[in-house]
Length: 340
Image (tube, rainbow, N blue to C red):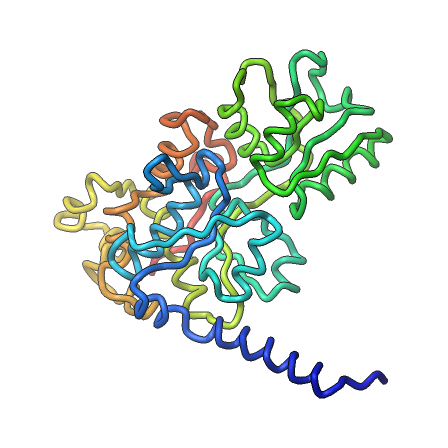
C-alpha cells in the first residue's frame, strides 16, 4: 500500500471540504445572493447566446430563467458564465455556477463519476455532419478520407471515432477548443466537414457567411439527450431544477401559456391546472419554495413549446422541427411526470 504524505492528505481534505461546501445548500445561497449562477455556452444561437446589449437568450438560457423565476420570483435574476466544453464540469463541481445549462449530453460516465446529476432532457438530439456543397457528398458514407472539424472535450470526438472505425473509413481530425473556432476552421476551409449535434449544426449554419453553400447530411450517428446539470449532494436543489423544467413541459401539455396563465388561474376547473398554478395543493411548498413558483415560470418564461418555438423552432432563424422534442401525445419524447 502506498501511504500519502501529510501534504497530500491535507490537499484531499481541502478538496473534499470545498465540494461539500459547494453542494451544501444551494437554495439558501441563491436566495441570499439574490441571483442564480448559470453556466452556458460561449455562444450558440438558439441555445445560449448574448446580443450586442449583453442580453442572453436561448432554450438553455430559458431553463435558468425558469429556475430563477421559481426560486427568486424574477426570471431576470440570473448571472451567466460562458463556458467551453472543457471548462463546464469543473465550474459546476467547484461551485462557480449552480446550474449548468449548456447543450450537455447526459451519459452514464458523467452521471456516475463526476459528482453530477442531470435534471432532465430539454432537447433530444443526435450527432450529424455538415459539409461544403462543393465536395459533392450527399451521405456520410462518402466521407472517407475527409478532414473533420470537431470541438474537444465533447462526446462528439468519441462518436466520430466510433463511426469511422465501424464503417472502415479514415479521417483527419482538426480539433478546436470552442464552437466559434470550429465554425471558423470549417468556413476557412481547414476541413471538409464539421460534426456536432444536429441542432448545433443548424445554429452554426446560420452564422456562416454563405450558409446556402453548406448542407447537413441526413445521417444521425448518435443519441444526444441534452439537459441541465447540478451537483450531487443537494437533493433539494436537484428537485427544484428538475421540477422547474417539468413545469414548462406540463404547462404545454395542459395548454397553459404565458398569455392565458392568469385567466386559467382564475377560472380553470381542472385539478391538474389548479395544482400547477398553486390554486390548490402545496407543490411549491414541497420544494421549499413560495406558493406560485410554477405560475412565475409560465408567466415570465412561458411553456416548453413557447420556448422551443422562439429559440430553435419555426419562429426562429433555425426552424428546427419538433421531431423527438414534440409532446408525447404528438409522437415525441417530451413528457413530464404528474404534478400531484
